[in-house]
Length: 302
Ligand code: GLN
Image 1 (cartoon, helix red, strand yellow):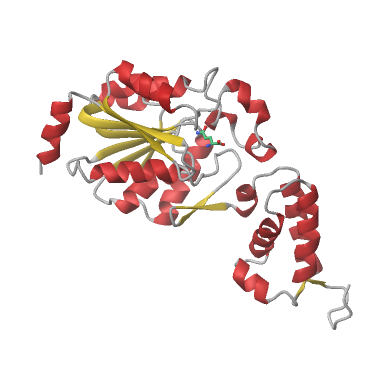
Image 2: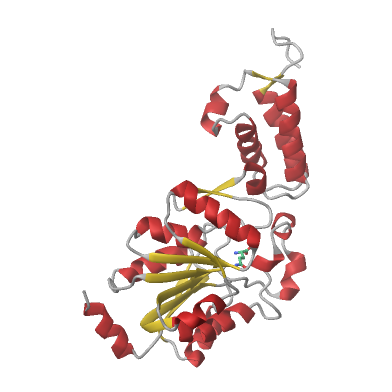
């Protein structure tokens, strides 16, 4: 160690390079960045502040706590479970083990829905099915405060976390337990939009997922034999809860666009669109429910 006045203490610089080496060996893709994120988290600061303090010492206790985080990360724990947060569309959502970590790609789904509100100013009632951390429903509510949003999940951990995120971000959404659309059936057709990032990974692909993704709940990832079990159930079920002229919008895997568009068509949706993510791969499918005339009629109202 360097012979400074803080003998026995570790400098930020040394801790970072030690951690980066460890994470590199563990096969982490961005080892330096992740080391910085974890140390900033441990020291309750941000990365920029950390990097201008590289010469400063860290107490042995803090250094040991940081090393424990680095070891967990090296063993495959998702970074967001260690830091407790992930940014999504400019807001920080809390993350915890047992609930899927938000992915940037889901922004394509949220933006597609927001864009469609432009043509359907009468839409009010929206259900985010399988909300997880709550990113979809909470973001929609914060972007469009007039909406009534239900965030649903079948997982108690997800419901608790979505409630925490809604409270923390000041989003007045209803977080309720529901297995897919079951909770809405008695209400009749009263939803304008059903939006979901369902589990869509093929069962046979589950074992091949990266170590950190395998630490995330299979409940949120495993889409059954062909990955489309939940998409099919949503497409069939949304017909009973959507108002005529309403929309079903789902996130999908990069190779599922054609198949999901076909499922939507066979189930009776029209105006079907497949949208790509920023990497140019299929990511979202939208379908309108009811005759296209109904859809047009609704556009002019209010
Ligand atoms: N996009 C996620 C992944 O590839 C999957 C999310 C999901 O199944 N809904 O890890």
